[in-house]
Length: 102
Image (cartoon, rainbow, N blue to C red; front, side, top):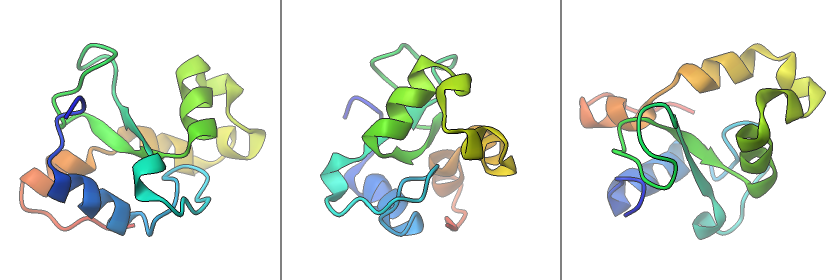
């Protein structure tokens, strides 16, 4: 609710990500353990419109991203994956009727 997602949207993200963290791709066995990452420049820190949600992260990646891009593991800092991830808005795409891809 805090992140402006419906249950269906949340579960669609879990499925599209294959049950893995959107950044490091580590499996997260319990889908309720994901952290919802959103673009904080769009909405207040503790709330989201949903359209600015970038993905679901495991706790370590979420903490590193909040503390600053430079705190991410080096393999992610140097990877084109991080820039791609930061530019994504899968919920916005889902609401536009586009299919989510991993």
